[in-house]
Length: 466
Ligand SMILES: Cc1ncc(COP(=O)(O)O)c(C=O)c1O
Image (cartoon, rainbow, N blue to C red; front, side, top):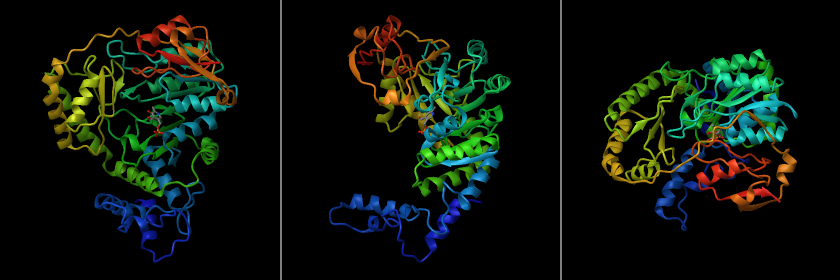
């Protein structure tokens, strides 16, 4: 059952004159041959027209995202029941808008909030807009590969000893490399202290559908979570879910979404969210089973190629569908060689290449990926790279001094050499990759240690407040 898809199919069948937005009027002009278009462009637009006929707006017979009463409401209810949420919301502006909605509806100006240091920019931005005091809990980092791991329950306890008034936590699980923190234990600690647990599960929309994949954040005690259905599931870009574990949060989340989300939601995105839920309900367990088995087989066959080291989470739980191949300083060469052979990765850095595999990847694709990795192996082994001495920034539990939003928007800054920045106040985040964890926050006074770390990452210039 797909209520939104059904609504769009029925609407498309109607004989009608559409006197409303979007102005392309069901892709009308995309399907004509225009003299200024080449045949290739015309063909592209004709394909687009097929899709655009369903790109409608809230007119009679079509439900509204911001006031759902029909198909959208039904689809969201079905999603809540599939995911085990009290309520679920469909998002058309990505997890980013879900993160803002979770934070706006949970915290107030002046609240102290724990944040795992690997949080996405949207978390820091939303906390800055809200006016919270942010206490960063550092994630562990694997010193060999510089891959960020996760925060630990022990560190969350320590954070409470230092900041007993914290109102809760915002944390990422899983991270970009598929690493999962022990959320069940962390939720317990936060709830013992009457706090709220908000999880950015942007990369974990497929969690919980199969025992070979980590459990979902909802099943591990979170109060709210967001999932980018476009990252690891089947939605068009920007489609995401926000789930809440208790309907006491519902009204505020809904109000927050009305403030920040577009008033012209894409019904194409909504339709793919509807399909995603139906697909995962019917096929998720089986397809993830096949995917996990194929990937386990892939990993064991790759073992004999010793220069490829498959990242296994270093003792933390790790999602098998996030394949991370470590190649000691040769990541950039590796990614380029693969792209030359038609394999495009999600991300690469000096040390590793990250591949995202989903239910859309069948055995044949996985086999082709394996063959390509093997085909570049000898060439990659011969590549010589200079050893870099990188200082691992371990971080500490600390309150950061984020400016309030108005101050941030009006900061006057200049760009100076790192050595001249010592003693000045940063106006920016400095986030070296890898591991992608902020070393300097806006309003931090820059010290020698910061400058050393920047230099070790070849960061030579930095923005400081005038
Ligand atoms: C951990 C994490 N959270 C949130 C986001 C934002 O998600 P979206 O692109 O769906 O807005 C990203 C995007 O890459 C992310 O990696």
